[in-house]
Image (cartoon, rainbow, N blue to C red):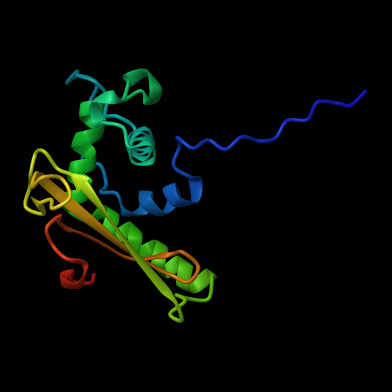
Length: 172
């Protein structure tokens, strides 16, 4: 009789530990700990928040679709923290750290071959980086351009209005 074997499952809804370690170094230090006399809820765990953000980015679900029991954090806290970190440039810092790691550990960027792709996305709430989407009857939309090297590592990510041609996209 064969023994049942179990394989270690991948937890797609938790940010991978090596990536979390790098991101954690970029996070702002918590100013002053809340004293027990002030009351109120304790601050949400940064790890729980980033796992919830990772879940939204991985699945493409709406922020409001997050349930508090999944990560122990409300969807409004997750979205607010994501917006604050985005405005602080946290994700750009992380991208830079990951590119440095990639260059150091994997022999650098493969400049011999690159690929670029883009995606149109609806943006019903508008924003400064939106434009009339030519593929969606002129509704407000955004375009995401991604440039990767020969091994698939991202080199540049650019967000612009959906009405901008790829050729007109500035590189980052």
